[in-house]
Amino acid sequence: MDTGSISRNKAVKGRGTVSNPEGRFERLTRDPYDDGWTVEEDIPPLKTTVRIEQCRSIITRNDSPDIPFEQSINPYRGCEHGCVYCYARPSHAYVGLSSGLDFESRLFAKTNAAKRLRAELAQPGYRCRSIALGTNTDPYQPIERRYRVMREILEVLAECRHPLSIVTKSALIERDLDLLAPMARERLVHVFLSITTLDRELARRLEPRAAAPARRLEAVQRLTAVGVPVGVMVAPVIPGLTCHHMENILEASHAAGACSAGYVLLRLPHEVKNLFREWLTRHAPLKAEHVMSLVRNTRGGRDNDPRFGSRLRGSGSIADLIEDRFAVACRRLGFNLEERTQAHDRFRSPADRSQLPLF
Image 1: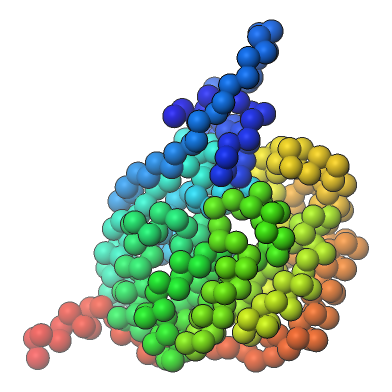
Image 2 (image 1 turned 30 degrees about the horizontal axis):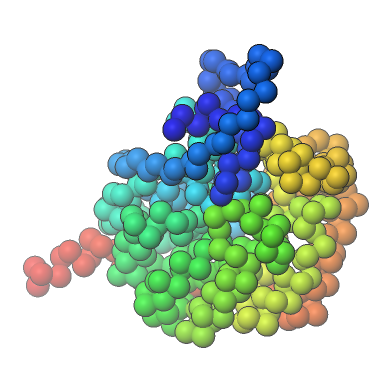
């Protein structure tokens, strides 16, 4: 199906956004036109398509001062979870696709990721620093069941004893407990489950193909049971829509065994702000203006503030209140009391292993 032809005021079952606007680099745009005919059309299900991407490199380096990692890997481009608020949506514009329905239905799998990772880790000048997975799109999104790109990456990192962290909204991570548990015993892995709300119905509309909130909490329990350190990310915190769920999420995560917690305020870069406004109009029309007013309050009067130091936490009285509430809840529950360090001295380069048969 040509997703560009989908009506902009029709919801597509199982998808987060209701439109498919052109990317910001496109030369042509399409606008709906009312020709006077009021014929209702049933929109067929929108199928997910996956293209194979042979990447030339796989480790991305980061020097942003407000992001706590230097290296990251994204096994997939686009994300089938369909979270309407996802700040990664605008990245689809770089491949000539829309940040709307294209982002969640026209995906790319980097099937040579493990091969490239092995080659990059074997480079003589490689410096071992923890690798973050799930910082852009979810490595355990539904297509991972078939393509297993994340599984292959984990196998390489486990073999090389390389430290890593994972952020996901998926219970599919339980599939890899056989790799994660031994790595946890060597202080090589830390997992974060991202939970936006405990309201099942709201979650279904906000993030339609991610695991249900209760299922994510169950994943926290199962990871913790085998010794994997697990944290919870209350992300994103949406003022006026999910911010009042923060304490409940932290309490439920603590009861499930989470040992640390963090949060990120809603970010609306580039096309995401218009997609989110559309979503509010359709799914929360009575709250739409109030929510956007609160968002602007946390972003200096704008829909988004990309500045380092404020983009993750926001600014202003409401952002300060959210930060204070989070800190109080974490102290009460005992989150973040211990600094969990990862072992970087256990790393063994694939190049070293390849020389073993010579001796």
